[in-house]
Structure formats: structure tokens, C-alpha cells
Image (cartoon, rainbow, N blue to C red; front, top):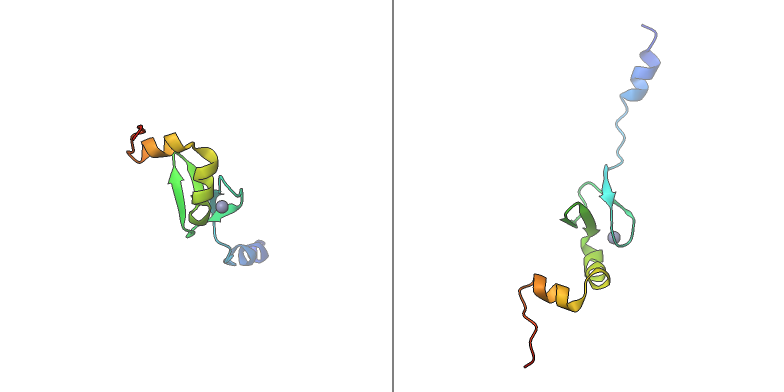
Length: 73
Ligand SMILES: [Zn+2]
């Protein structure tokens, strides 16, 4: 067959990991096997999560999500 060269090329396994998405905080690619948090299709590196949460959510939103109630002591 005339496609031997092409088949040989296609048979090479690229070691590059698969990109599964982009970090919503640092905008860098997230590769398969990377530790990250995921919520409603949003991906964030574990190491970016603290900063992301601080940027994206207000204190009262965070408190509410964690089950805290705002009150005057
Ligand atoms: Zn990140």
C-alpha cells in the first residue's frame, strides 16, 4: 500500500498530556491528571482556588455557601 509512511507517523504515541480545560483564575491550560476543582463546568487549579474564590465571591456569598449565617453578635 502507498500509505506506509503515514501509518508509521500516526503510530507514534505523543507523550503530551491531554488538556481538559482552562483554569478560570490563571487562564492556563489544565492537563489530564492535574489536581483541580470543578463546579458547573468551571475548572480551577487547587493552588488557584483560594485566590479565585476571593476574587469571585463576596464574604457573604462564601459564608452562605458554607452554611454560616450573618448576624450581629
Ligand atoms: Zn490556575
